[in-house]
Length: 315
Image (tube, rainbow, N blue to C red; front, side, top):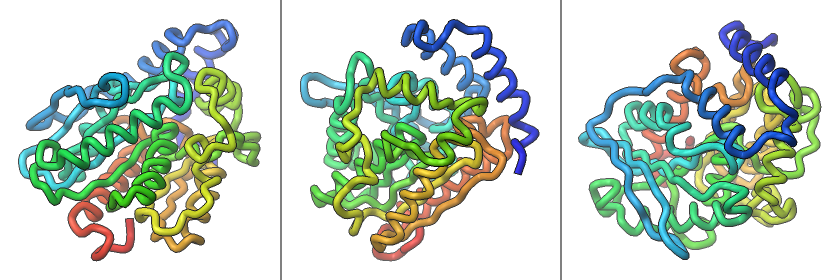
C-alpha cells in the first residue's frame, strides 16, 4: 500500500526540513529536541480533563516528574512511557496523546518523565522507570483512587521498549500488570531487519537517526533492558497489544516481538497500520489512522483495567 495521503504533506515537510538542516552529526541534542517538539506540536493541545497535575516521585539519587491525567470516576492506572529515542521526548511532546488516552480509556494516565540521554545514558532511564512503576503500584489509592486499582503499562517507540522491559521486570518481581500496550516498540537495539533497510530513509524516522539515538543512549545490545526480545523467557508476561506501522524502520522487530510473545503463550494482539510511518500515533488529531490507533490502545487499556488478567485474555 502507498503512503497514506494524509501523511504525504507531513512526510514531505520533514524531508525538506532535514535536507536544509546541518548534517545530523553536527546537530546538538537541543536542536534535535526542538525539531521533535515542533513535529509533536502539530497534534495540538488535546482534550480538557477534570484533573491534570505535575508531581514528583522518588527514585534512587533523587526524584523525577510524572504528569497525572484523570477524569472523575476513572478506573485503574495506565502508566505511560513516552517515545523519542530515549533522548528527545518529554511530557510535553506526548501531552495531547496522554490526554486522549485518559479520556477514552476512562483510566488515570500517569506519564513518567524518565531521565534522557546523553545526560542519563543507558540504563538510567530504565531504572528510573522501574522505580516509578513500583512507587505508583505502592500508592494506588493516590493515583488510582482505590487500593485494588489495576495497572497497565504502555508507550510508543522507546517508550514501547521501556514498557516491554517493565512487563519483564514486573513478572520477575511478582507485580501483576493487566496489560502491556506497545506502540511500534523498539525491542531490538541492534536491528538489521528488512524494514530497517526498506524504510530507513525518507519516512520521518531514519536509520541515521536511530544510530544517532544509540550514540547518545549507549545501549548494551545484549542487555535485555535494551533488547527485551533477548529475554530468556517471555512466559507469564502480561497480555500484550502490539501496534506497528508499514513504513516504519521498527516494523519488523515489532512484528517479531508479537510473534515471540504469542509463541510463549502470552495473549497477544497485533495490528500493522498500513500506509503509516513512525510517529503517526502522536498525530491522531490530524491523521485518521492515528486516531484509530489511539482509540485501539485506549480501549485495550479500558478492558484490561476493568477485568484484569483472570477475566479477559485479550489485550
